Image 1 (cartoon, rainbow, N blue to C red):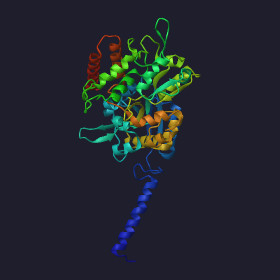
Image 2: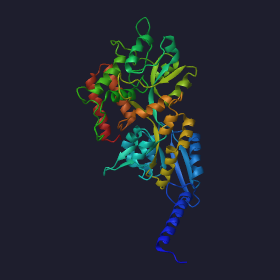
Image 3: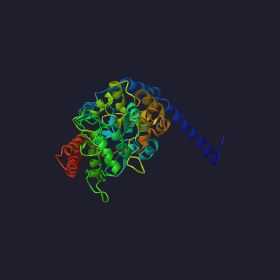
Image 4: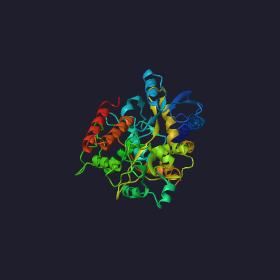
Amino acid sequence: MNFTRVQLIMIGSVVFVVLLLAGIFTGILPFTRTATQQAPQVTLTIWGIEDRPTMQNVIALYQNLRTNVHISYEQHDPTTYEQDLLNALAAGNGPDIAMFHSSWLPKHYDKIVPATDAQMSAVNLDKLFPSVITQDFVGTDSTGKQSVYALPLYIDTLALVYNQDTFDKNGIALAPQDWLDLQNLIPKLLQKDASGAITKPAVAIGGSGKTVDNAGDLLSLLMLQAGAQMTNSAGTQATFSANVGNTIPGLDALNFYTKFSDPSNTYYTWNDSLPYSLDSFAKGDTAMIFAYQSELNTIKNKNPYLNFKVAPMPQPTGAQKAVNVADYWGLAVTKNSKNPDWAWDAILYLTANETPAEQYLQATQHPPALRTLIQKYANDPNLGVFAQQALSAHSWSEINKPAIRDIFSQMISAVTTKQLQPQDALVQAEHQVTQLIQARGQ
């Protein structure tokens, strides 16, 4: 049978389409596999701090899809995890995939493998997750190319946690919406003894990290809300003591924070001789604290009968946009991996796919990171506040978050104990953070 040239082209086109569809459904094309009969057998390891059964159950969803991939998960102690991981990577026997903290990219980008644009581009990242993920997990190489280095498992944010019974007892119907509202509640909630000593603080703010949970993060948030530029555009120098317009937002934030521990101030409600704020709140003594969702179970475990509620983080009066601060973990492919494409395939499924992401959420009760799940859980009684705040979360290049928390705590203490004037304490802290950045957190 003879065919014309046009007929041969048409037949060839049909054959190409058939082969293309066959590739999609039999696993020939990368990252479009739904069956893996012809795919190589692959073994991957994941390290993290999450509960082992939780991670295994989520991983099982991926392995049911990719039957050629076997994944083992290794749970580590959160207090030693980062050093354990660094030691293993240096020895060449680290995992393929590691849980990766939201603050780690500036100091650990050279230890992980970014996704290709075909796997996950910076543009697509913003369509799937809030902008804070781009701030934390997108890096720029020496050529100026932006790449995605990790993807989030969840997004946690700092929120206001208050004692409902204490509010009801004092005739307070609603949680404060801005900082002015919060200040105005202090006279109603603060209790002192006959000598003038604080017995029941209104809110845990103003003290150092010695007594105030999340003191460093709270001060960072106040600086961001005030409009401080925490680092220069290159991220090579801390700049939170710099002028912005006619003000120094970082100094304004430090003065605002520390006035709550100044006995001469109208809004005095805290000092570093008080018990640790998380314990004081759980006991029912402190009316309000600022906490992450991940800390709520700690409060419940300390006092199962405490009637507390969560409200959005207070914002500056008249602010046009909310500014919140996030703290969370994601997944990254390490340079030790011999199968980085398969490792990224697993991460994409676990984090960017609604089914496993929601199963992880339900098991851990961590707030969602996917935009679709944020919308779904926006009004959830337990996760709604945190889900909504993820959309307005901000971050900055905290090269070594634990060290920066300590530096901010020391800055607070230097002011409250009158060792330094606020301006001097701010400049000193800025210099210390710059030193961390220049040393790349080592």
